[in-house]
Amino acid sequence: MSASKIGKVTHYYDKIGVAVVELTKGIKVGDNIRFERGGEKLFEQEVKSMQVEHKEVKNAKKGDDIGLKSDQEVKEGAEVFKI
Image 1: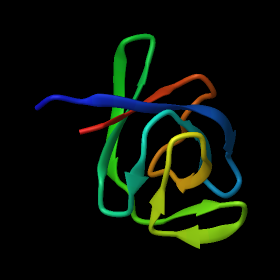
Image 2: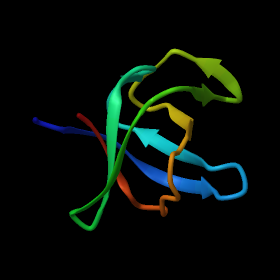
Image 3: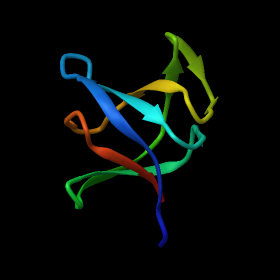
Image 4: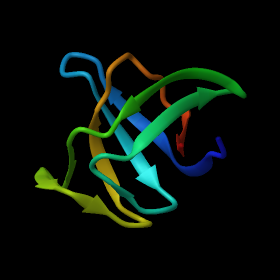
């Protein structure tokens, strides 16, 4: 399975379990993603919902900052890959 980097985590809201991801490539609901930090694979999940500027969206494009419900806690600086 090849993975391509699509962005990185710039903030994590632990109380609500949401990661803010700065995108370098597009993403859509239903995509499978993986979080990595320092080359270590953290976890994988399906994109179930995301927001841009507090609005629910199905697609996000390069340059967007998205809010993404995260299955586990993830630290700032973690890289996000589409798998």
